[in-house]
Image (cartoon, rainbow, N blue to C red; front, side):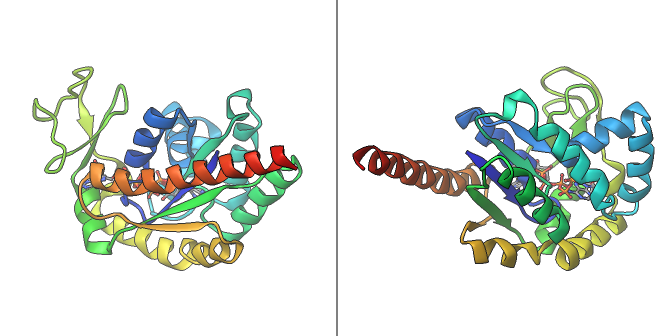
Length: 229
Ligand code: AP5
């Protein structure tokens, strides 16, 4: 299965991606995570990306398209993958279509997690991430047992540089102006599945799970029909 997890910053894409991976074993590819690793390592890509990320702006298309091209060529994506944070512009979506199309492949579904701006701000301002193992918490909705330390590995938790309120507001603006129009792009192709992103993590996952189950059933029916012909 090839999926795109779509939605505003803080909608819960990363949280839901980890639930989907656990249940379905689908490889999770997050451009945000790839860029943050490059920033941490201080590579030329990381230094370039940081200058955009800290302001809440998008990293240039050619840079992220190159990253995805390289990533989805790897062997572990052969049976599918789930993109989180890509595509974010029309040129990125077109580039993805071209990459997959040249291999006779396509995206099965775009799952758009719908959350209002004020909820996004609440979610992002409370987010804390483990500096060592990357596990994510929320200081109110999913707090660590020991104040500012990770339950899993005991390391310190930190707040992302781009999670400050003024940067979050800019990220939301960028999402509404440059990324949200992609919903129309995928709606036209008939693969957009919008789901309500409010409620608990489990409630949201339940809605996504129903979409995935119905996709799997449709695929099974398709292959059965092919077998009958
Ligand atoms: P990226 O890392 O992709 O950030 P984002 O899309 O802004 O998304 P977030 O990671 O902030 O949120 P999320 O939706 O994953 O929510 P999460 O699950 O963490 O991108 C960062 C930057 O990199 C961009 O601004 C850009 O500069 C650059 N970039 C990346 N991709 C790019 C591209 N393709 N093109 C150009 N530039 C690119 O949840 C958030 C919080 O809410 C957590 O604390 C979580 O515990 C909590 N939470 C989750 N679900 C729930 C729930 N149901 N109820 C209560 N709390 C919840």
